[in-house]
Amino acid sequence: MTILVTGAALQKSLVTLADVKTAIAPGDSDDAFLTDLIIRASRKIGTLTRRKFEREAVTETLSGSGTTELMTKFFPIVNISEIRFDSSVVDADSYQINGESGLLYRAERWAGSTPASFDITVNPLPWQGNLDWALDYTSGFLLPTDDFVSALIAADTTAKTFTLSSGTWPLLVAGDIFTLAGWVTATANNRIFTVVTRTDSVVTVSEAVTTSAEGDSITVTVQTLPEDLEELCIEMVKGSFYARSRDGALKSEKIGDWAASWGTTSMSADAKAIINEYKVMF
Image (cartoon, rainbow, N blue to C red; front, side, top):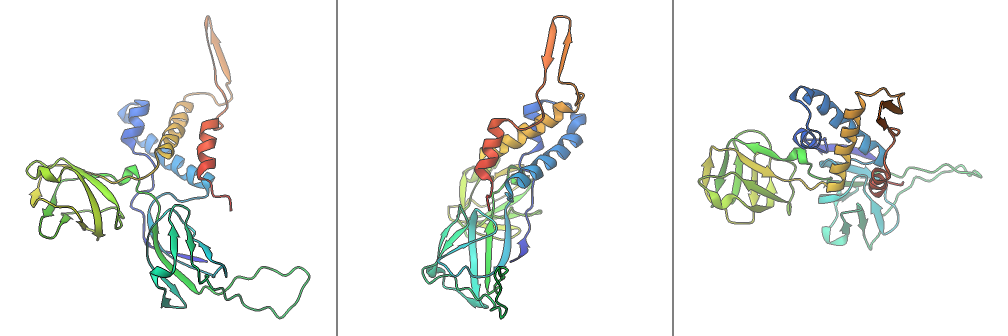
């Protein structure tokens, strides 16, 4: 199996600095430290679950399973643009997608072409089949850090488009929804829209659009990350933030009538349950 990233994730942190600061209420001087903790916590969640949660577009080449089912490396799948077998495009009507699990079903089977071994042994090694299948797909969630504020978005009622004057739209795919807020002159654009197509600077939608070149700050909300993962990341950052001011070897302390004790830095039962819910077991 090989993976070629064709559309890299714009963001990888599972929470925003603003949300963490709301939960912790630190001073502004802690921003750099908190940003580092957010990155570390996001990576740790990915390591513990053996998954990537950020949205990316990839080309995955792999061997056929020889059965009716084939599993992609990354999930949830939000879009498959093309599947090829030995460079020939496969009819999209010939397979079904379980996007949440990354499982693809094909009644005709995902043909395998495992190289033959001429050496017969008692315990033969597993063979890697030829990488005949190539899948172009987009997977993962849009993160809270994918939300953004644009100083200028041009809206076109005829083309049903929103065009950024600078910057890049997140990796939206057909069927995604996003919410706009902050339009002053084109107030009808302050609502939810459904994506039809997307390029780096232009998104075409299915709903009516009110033409405007707006100079005010327009908030674009796109996130799809499950809330429990976001909350888990915040709790991990919070634990690391407060732990920095304590002696790691100190388990309890008593001064006069005041006393306190601290547990270990291991995860809570709730945190472990969330990790296990999203963990890849193979």
